[in-house]
Length: 354
Ligand SMILES: Cc1cc2nc3c(=O)[nH]c(=O)nc-3n(C[C@H](O)[C@H](O)[C@H](O)COP(=O)(O)O)c2cc1C
Image (spheres, rainbow, N blue to C red):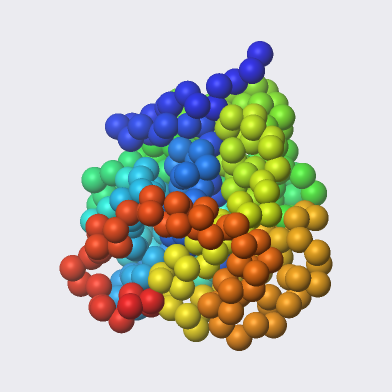
């Protein structure tokens, strides 16, 4: 039986309009990515992980992650750290910035994060992990979710041992990426564990890992009983995959559509990060958008060499002139930047693009 991904569901009092969640991805999930994800059918979007220590010290770049636009809701902002009190204070800031959900990272396998006692290492310190969830739930007036891996070592089942305790501590939703931290992104996500977790807890579970098509999403929802699927790498430079997963609409985008989405993405990212940061950040996206046989390979190489993002836009418009009208239409539908909610204490210099 087909599962209807357009069916709404709830995380406590937050209504999630579809059963597709856009994954948090460091170095990817900027506001432009999240807003585009919403347009293509994601019911919930998530920021990349934000350091609670960076928030505590009012680090300018960290505060920049707390920009929230009108068309992103419902939005989860993800925080990471190892000190319950600091995580609680970060959660309060995140909720005040306009997040609908505070998400806690118990999954990051990267050494820079785990050596500070944060991310996936907390799966092996359940007392501290629960203390963090409790502190965050107490401090934030919005639902709290937890995203985790299966455990630290291959074959680990720690996620099942800790899941119910995290719920008792205050987690309103659990997202499981059933790979070990050691695996990083190798092997396969073992969603039979997701099914076991669904049986063990009485909150919605989100299934993350290797979901790149409507058929895969259907299979994972049907066999796990998860409330929703989360899509990460499959959506990089490919919002059309989200549409295919939600609606089964498998039409390949035209060159004009690809160029137009990329141009809007470039301009929005420059506005968010400023030209200097954005031009480096965007390079990986050129390959993601233009690959899949959409444009000849040397074209991507050419874009990566260009000095400014404005030159990239000009070159894209030469390659796909009729993208102009699509860009105009997409931009006219974006909300006014003046509508963005920002913390009062935010330094003005974070507005990268002016
Ligand atoms: C580049 C990259 C950055 C990521 N950053 C985060 C992050 O900040 N927080 C997090 O919880 N997961 C992060 N993840 C993990 C994803 O959210 C997701 O769980 C994982 O990629 C599996 O899903 P996928 O197969 O759909 O990509 C990241 C993954 C990638 C590829």
